[in-house]
Length: 218
Image 1: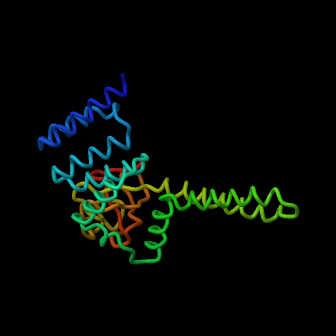
Image 2 (image 1 turned 30 degrees about the horizontal axis):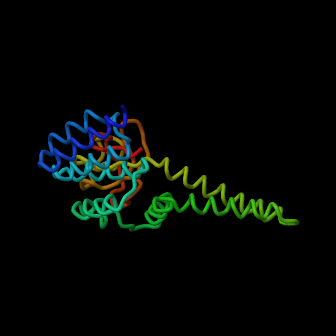
Image 3 (image 1 turned 180 degrees about the vertical axis):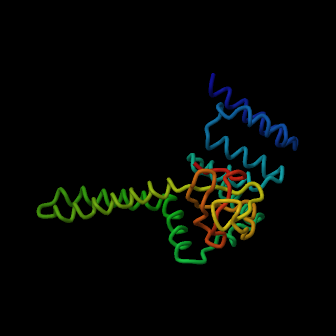
């Protein structure tokens, strides 16, 4: 019964999408969040929001779709299209060493850290079966643990997509001087302090801002 329900929802969304009734498709998806797998639900929501010209929200849902395990050629193409229209790739390009490290961590967490960790684990097991290779096995096991830890650490960074106009302050209070605004659609890596968050990445937007108007990638 559950599979039929999912199929019916997706068929109706597809029908509304083909009829260009994007508002209707959005409403149906909004009411069906618990009837479709998370990755697929976010992907369809992103497609509808892109047609409604809500590109920052569309980018958020594309990233959430990927985070929940959905993967396809269309997803990658849509991400590239949305990010190009928003102009966020240039805005998120590294300026400082911290930016490069953060960017490297984000890329590494897209499967690379896990792959390296598994490879290290396989080598460790192989060496453990050999005579006089105990130290080598321990070394590769240690390296594997480091990359698993790195992946866990990066995955738990506080990441947000800016979906509403945001002002940057020099400190965690409105009494501090305004430094500028953050463009819509930009992904932020942050640290939290109650209702205020400190922007770590991209460094060109370094400062503090309020939580409202941000959607967390989690």
